[in-house]
Length: 422
Image (cartoon, rainbow, N blue to C red; front, side, top):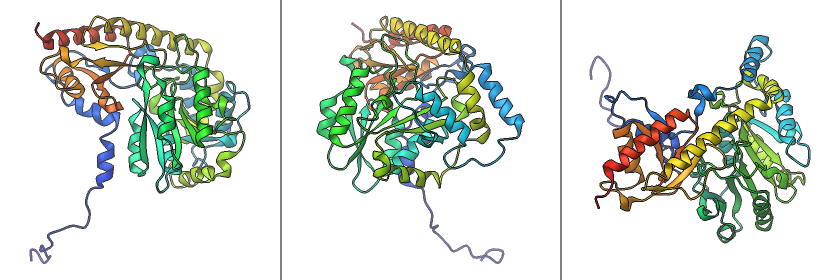
């Protein structure tokens, strides 16, 4: 006894959630946080952040004043201080339906739209809605690790198909067919591509849809980088093939409007044949929404103004800057022998490059490369292992051109310091 209380209890009944701890290590955020810890605080140079897809820190990538005014107007109106409905407020859902329908052969209804806290929550909702005993989902390699994290947390089996670098990162259709069985519920595609910077042609997307119909699965099309295409291929939404196989599109305003922190996304059912409703997927989505949180109502209130009034010249400016940055990145990569790029990026904000360890000394793998690069050059690049492709690197090029030039000078110096002696 001490001060009249017992101190004899030696154990407590709670402990960490081991699954949550393990799956959180799979995220881009987790890997980059560890790399930031490697940066030498004594280095007074600015950090070159080529690891994360968030260009909003750079003045040249500021969002349009129309979007800023829309949020301000929504807040000052006092009309959006209330709770949201489970699926999102009707004016916002109607605006998203009209916005997305511009690129489709049919019209979406507001009932096809579910507003989410960014695209990340859309992934969370959908994978939980599809999870059931013995279910498996087909994921691309390389891919976006958030799918792995939520797939693991929901205890779905994850099966991986390759994207083919020699074919501009197209889906390996034959591999997908060989992986699928009666327990396969869906496959994921990301277009424009994260982490590869690819853009899929209409012909390739149609092959994916036809294969999905053959296998009896739905297609999850992650289009968070929709319309950020600057190469020879235009962006084509997977939803145009919703009559062949059901498509659930995930998207947001985060990237096209350069506002990832506003956390407004959507989950959209492209299913004119009503297959998702018939098989209970809509009920499962609604069930999860009923126990989850909603996007901030004032952001939802701003959505109609943001989607309807943003001018084309804003979008053109963003795409042109990305094209310029992609050109700089692609050309500078050629000057560094230890990395090679299989194809020039045509969309999104990323490029995958292969790391040639045989040309380097005292570098064990891609993670070791990125940790030492952070420590020696105050520069962040994402190791390929974080997106499922060991000994590759994902470089983010959406930043001020001067930062890119500085970054590649540092990368060149790093290579020369660690180059294997001839």
